[in-house]
Length: 138
Image (cartoon, rainbow, N blue to C red; front, side):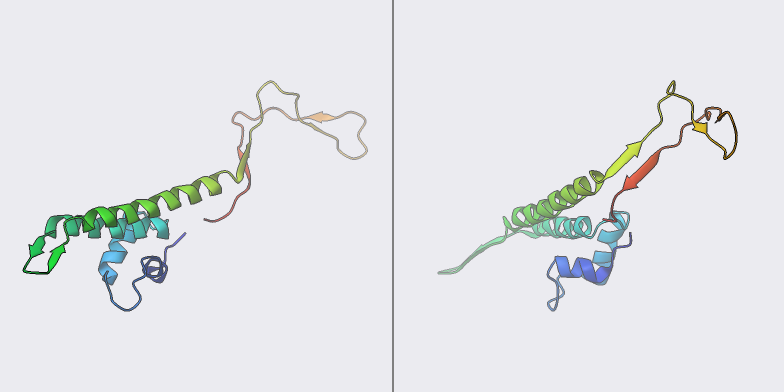
């Protein structure tokens, strides 16, 4: 699965104000291994939270007070919500697969060739294949 930059930009609601540059979002996508737009959005907010935690200040004048010290904590909560949503999506996708594995010692496979009196018994393979049924790209 390839994650599109536009998908991540849409998730972080960065449509006109450009909170994140293309380079920052591309780095967030690459950090996920290019597998999850939700994780990339979480990575972007996590880096922004770290930036605000470092730059957080409290400024107070006569009747005006601005405190950005807790902004990093709020952004980290947003990042964690993206990570939790990505984890839930992974669990949903993983739950849709069924592994069918032959068990050693089970009855031998029998193939009946047309017009033969006795079945032809195939030898057991040395390694058993694993078959995956179902699933979805996530």
